[in-house]
Image 1 (cartoon, rainbow, N blue to C red):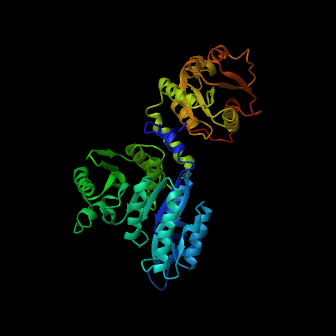
Image 2 (cartoon, helix red, strand yellow):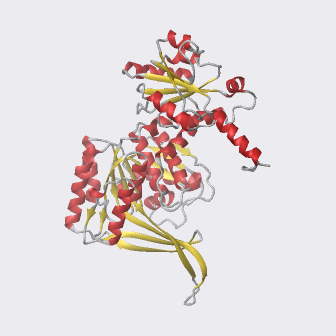
Image 3 (tube, rainbow, N blue to C red):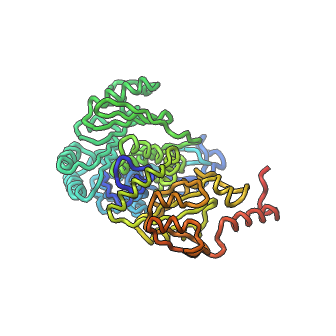
Length: 502
């Protein structure tokens, strides 16, 4: 039901990622990880001997931004540069494994693929080896890069530049992008080590970290970045004044993000506290999700919050990693809990969908412990129309219907989980024993119920008929019910198969 307007819920915005087309331009890298266990000290020197246990290769740099966009549901055109070497071949394989088409990469024998090899012992970094150089790109290679930008741009709904300073995002590429966007101003997000190079790029948003922002406004600044929000705000305002960009989002790790617009309006967006956080590639995840959110219709503040959600997921994952669409969708549903959609707001949205000719399906339930039967029922219900709205019983009504020991899960958690399921376009709480009043307010075209009901025995049948809804009774998956799940858990605890929590 995402209408790609700034009033959309966070879930609606994230759902809008699917099918968006993203052009990514930047420095492609291969990240390799050798992991093992330190067994003893080496005789040749005071270093550990690491017995190898695992090896992994993942896209890094701009390639990680491309992989994140693909994992979040976008179709990706990735314009980058690799050498005709083993690292380049391995990177292309890693990209294809993550759903990124590697045919837009320029292979230039004049360069060496950028490669970072990290060695870890017992989860601790031992050393990192860096190799590769792409600044010596040939004239033919640079010509092909520009040609790929020109060919890829008309295909895309957004552009992400991930510039690590190795030469792909050259002045010629920046100028070409600016000219292309004059006739087709799709969102442009720029994440660059040297953000001052993009002062005339006309970006929709730039996403430097605080150190990069400070270096841009004062190249002679000390190595340590500004301390405190007041000092950081000063840096953000100076950066905004020197850039032709609609918004500046200065990331400050655990201190959140400062978002500044052309008019000078400043917003501080906090981040989620995360224990034992890593930060390899989190900036790519942040910029990728933020850019997709802008293209899906979010305003800059909402898009930045979604970027923060993506980064919070990324830093909890090992190595250089991507943020899966479903995981971000679950986080988005939790964000929407803070201000759940009211019945009046949802009814207004559905009126617009109905006017556009879409068929609205409604179903309801407790959804206390989600299982495969729930998912199958919702998929079958969704197939009966264009939009599926799910009513979720509030806690008080569940106690009246199921007894004082239910529900197991709080109403807000149940609502969030249902809203995050792929077949569901909107979910709303209702507090009566039946959804009759909700049906009267939402006026769906189809009302679906699972179980042994008939149109005559369904408690809310009269309300459905009043609004002209067709009643569909769908059979449930035999043996799949929350009651059975709870009974099975209780039996396992009783038999000692599960230890009871003291």
